[in-house]
Image (cartoon, protein in one colour):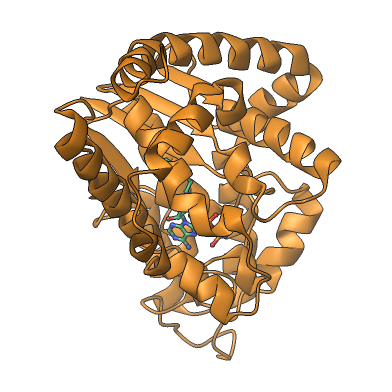
Length: 321
Ligand code: ADP
Ligand code: TRP
């Protein structure tokens, strides 16, 4: 099975990103043919500081390698290193009705929230369709917010195929229903836009400070405590096995400890959990040329896959003359 994922280079990763998406990507590469790229062209729709975008791209590549994207198992590259995607984007534009893009939720939301609209925001789903269709994946794993974009890619592919024959593979999306939403420090969904994140690669002191901010019930130290709806417990659950979790539950119900103790415990557990990832990240951070080499090799592999498809499309559309 071929899986394809695009990742926006959006800065510091949080534990919601890890448990909600990155871990699935890493696990999936064991049994599937996995394609993953950093969507830096897409990021241009929101980042218009060139130096910043370049930094974010390298930071994302470093972080994803540290967290377990294995370049021997996955084809891992930066979107802009396979320019054929822009060619397909233009070709597909002629098979994209305006109405299809006008109905896109993410475009409608952004305009409703007062973002200055421009063409890249509007045509974002066409580029995403090109990302997908160029590599003919069977499945595109996505978060719920991206389902419609894959549906648009399907619609465009069907339109193209109706006109030129059965050339593009119609992709399926897959939403990981069993993946729980990771709560933030305030109990809402963890998200950068809510300012309630616990970052994976923060400094130890800063991380502890963030964890201390987690909102908890006000119960006297000696009293037994509820763990079911406790934000600290719900976060700790992500890192613990069954036995460790039962021990934590006992500590809640016995009383005699405050939420401050549970927060310290969570900070320790989390620090340990990401220890190896942190070391790997430090390694790649000091060896950015190695990261660049990995990305170049990945781009070559990706282009090998893309070229036969783009050749067929050039021929059939008359661009090759
Ligand atoms: P943010 O909301 O912080 O901007 P993104 O939208 O960039 O995060 O999310 C990137 C990926 O991480 C998506 O696949 C999304 O489904 C996943 N993700 C983000 N936050 C959470 C969360 N709180 N719980 C589970 N998954 C999450
Ligand atoms: N739009 C996706 C997001 O914001 C990123 C993305 C770009 C993508 N191209 C893709 C995801 C192709 C899957 C397939 O998360």
